[in-house]
Length: 495
Image (cartoon, rainbow, N blue to C red; front, side):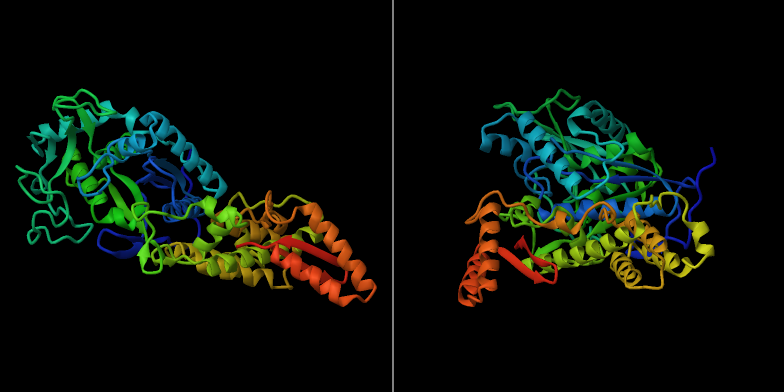
């Protein structure tokens, strides 16, 4: 079967390797191999973590929109990730298991399930492969053996280390001044290390204790280093080289630098593994990035408990470039709720006019560019082709929804086409779906209905003092009342 060709304008992506925006060309015509750093399942994902997966999902949707056949792989880290990214501290999984008095396997299972539930709630496409680190220990041992055979490792009392001076341009991705670095400036100080940037590939278990997760290896009983798993699994499932590797901006400085070194040592041809490295910026609260280590952090559940639909957070993320820090505050989330609600209401109007006929934009959209929709489709294509410019896509969508010259059929086709990129379920989610369903609070839904009926009676009797008092009581309970030509409606207040 002939591979599909790219549709529309040339696709430009920002490559962190060299910090350059440039044309993207896949290694195999029409096909893209995409690898994403997945979660370390020792705790719930916070909203900053989830921004990374919304970004990667948007990238994947854009690649599909452009006509590429995408294979997406994302790992699950259930062993090896230390409490610091810099080769020090306890294993995050073992620390969580000890604190919660559960087995490490139960910890991994629980938080993996919670993560996948968040992905589903955010309408993030599941990866084609989602390998777990603990299922690939043999592959990681074989990977280390090849690094050793190729002359890139040395052994110390506590484990097997990668010699970063055996590969050219170590630290290029992070633009590190390797020669000017001091020991302890970036990674842990370990007696016997040849260079400050060297990192551990295999951690030997202490001789006086047993780890919760450990395996036999040529370098003793122990566990793999965190950086190792992504190199091994990306190459196993996508081959080498592959097209795109994604992750958060913090991965650019340590984790992905070490992945590249491992890939170069394993492949032996100086290749970094992936041709394009892409990173999303932090979600920030005030001046600080959101992190679990700082203590209390915001989860998707935090939003839903305040009455916000999960897709409101997706909409919130799409309003900004993935390469810009995104500041979180409740006013911005409330504004995103209102903006998404307006979209749904306008689309509901179009759907009512349309009469229920099938709407689809799943096929090749280029033939529609020859007709009256050409400017709108080209504007969408131009925005996504400009390094995933989702703010521009959102602006284009709002413009077309305000264009009364478009037929209902054409307008809804364009909505479906935009949603292929945005993933907001624009044709299947309603404004009513955004409203919170309260199961607890000062008033039940039945009590609200009684008070509203009482208020209507008071208004008919011109007892405005009583009417206003009931409104105040409802407002205090988080109920928003709207009086209109067709009567009074109400909804729970979000936030």
